[in-house]
Image (cartoon, rainbow, N blue to C red; front, side):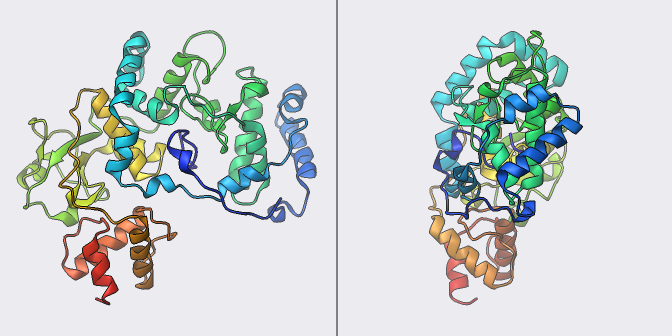
Length: 403
């Protein structure tokens, strides 16, 4: 779960790469060595009331890990895939079947959660499956060493300092021992990959054994995830993502997560649910994660408030939301009309051309993020092309031709 960082969900980041970095960049720490910095951090933790026993057990002997810094400087090649590719791999039939089995095996816990938090079983189970394959892949890195390294490093020192302090609180209250804190390189913990601060703030002892154990206890992990989702603003009984078909009457420039229309308006433009049910619920956005040639969805406040906060990646968030609909009984989505996408290199070329025209697309990385989508839409409107905010060969050729 990533409210502040995007990296870390175990399965999807199997393709992360690293780049060389300068060893022990201490410029943000006033030139102090890692060892000196760690000694001062221990004193600060004691001043905040954390016991000397917890501090010693967690931090004595911790060393700087250059490999962790390298990973933090790396990219996420997995997100250069199209949505259909990513969702097809991550929300596959086997994972959906395993998710359905998990829902049956934890039926009593899911009933209690829906009563207390209003979060459906499918929503939780999709996150559970994507984050750690239902607790089967938690990562095996030294969490404390990784977080201490990132708290010392200059890139996100303040953020990871907070995470390291939260780790000491978890140890101090007896939820986990330092040896149990194993996970991905960015410090997430447990079956839903909570940041340590979220572990402290939203973790629940849902099985009643006196400890919050998000690694071993399915009940604790599920209840805590529901608690966090409710905190993000989950609206009980409301949809999050619904697959639809669009007609030629739909103005594609309205297909944008920043634009909302009523059910009546979408219906009037010829948008239809693929399951034949009428469009209902609060105002929603038309979401075309792969442009007009791919699947189409109506995205509701639950999607925009919860999914896009859990993880800022549009591909990941849409996959998690889609998988949740499948676990709640929806049919497999349409994969579109087969029109080929630009590959990652084509997207990079397009990003360079957009940047040359003064658009802020962020990093030239082949990932179609919010900045790239906004720039694409502006150029499509300018050129009179279908403004679906998705990179196309048509737009790339026009920009290459100097239009």
